[in-house]
Image (cartoon, rainbow, N blue to C red; front, top):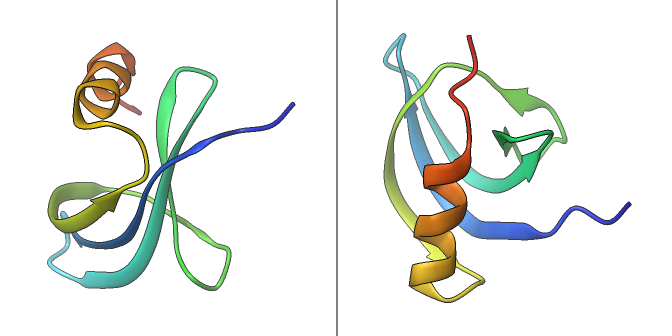
Length: 71
């Protein structure tokens, strides 16, 4: 199954205060997944500082609203 990327070139801030650049976001199994440029998943994303959407803004918003928050 192909997982479409929703946003690229993201800068995200995690709950522990660290900042990650060049992050991609996609949806897998109903949850947002943030992937670093090294291919590792980034957990605990608290805020998105900047991003480039690769889908129309309304589609991005709808996808993010339908996702469950990871526990």
